[in-house]
Image (cartoon, rainbow, N blue to C red; front, top):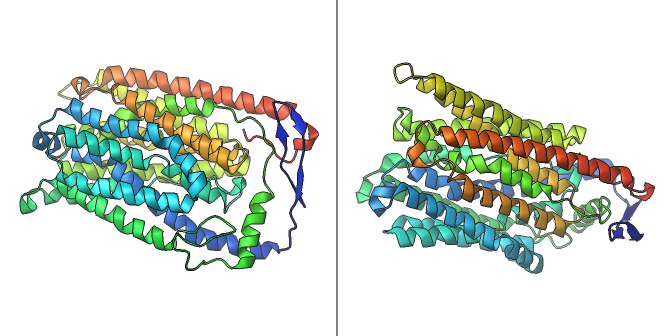
Length: 457
């Protein structure tokens, strides 16, 4: 069987063929894929969980005495979170350049150790300057982790097997916060200090597990220490060969995925950051508000997996991307309508919470579904990593702007922000449709030589 690695400069001008001998049985491959899924995937998923934990726990801290203890305003707290996103934007692409040189597994371990240290020492900050510095450093070290993880996964799984292998883990972050914030006052520390200390310490502990177990890319699958590998020589051969069999032609990767994330993630910038605060304003206690927000995160998990399964089976990734944006647009509209028609005497906190949960569940999955679509249409591993880095950059740029859409002065209704969110979701839907048309046009004009690899719609 041959794997084609073709080069073109807009139109194909040259073609190279590389023979890959399939000398294994299907049953042997299935057993090996299961081994990868039971070994590599839990490591990457747990690492992604701790990334979410340290990136988003500031939203939980804001429901405690965080601003009072540091002597800052809510606007300054928002600016600190924006500095974190700025750090991600600035270091995302440089991080991926380093990734290609030092190896994905080494770089991922270093990033996790570095941001784990910063996340832990946040518990000692005393003023605004220290808060700004730690949030920026946190973003700088977190930048590049998601594309790096997808790059490493791409060395073990061909593109057709990747769409359903990541889900959202942020719900547990909110539940942890709900419990930890009850430590407020223990040993004279505020609850938010315990939150940062415990979350950061767990990250550092898991970084040491990655150091010991995270494999390198085939053919050298040894972890960083180089002492052993859980894959033997034949397994490494199969892993490398099965990925080579799906190497696509080198075609230009469309860039509208950047715009999809920018428009689609912007409304989440404010609603995710202030989610626990919004729920608390509906009349719930601090611990209950943080726990209730977790429902939206967990509701996103089956929705994300269902969309991933749908996209994998049908190759209609554009439709899968449309669903969360259309869902969000609809329920944001209901949330806005409810705010207009309700009065203070008839307000229903339960109804508002239910609507907020439905909005949160959908807005969290638009980005990963679009990222998976971009990844599946990348033409090689480095392009996949760079494309995902651009998607992450656009998401964080959107977060920088999105946090200004929902200013504290508009609480608790946030009516101007809700109107802006509806418009942004409509824009995201239009860009998704345009991306689908572009992919369809690329497939139509592709030559017969490229028929074995087509852009997925």
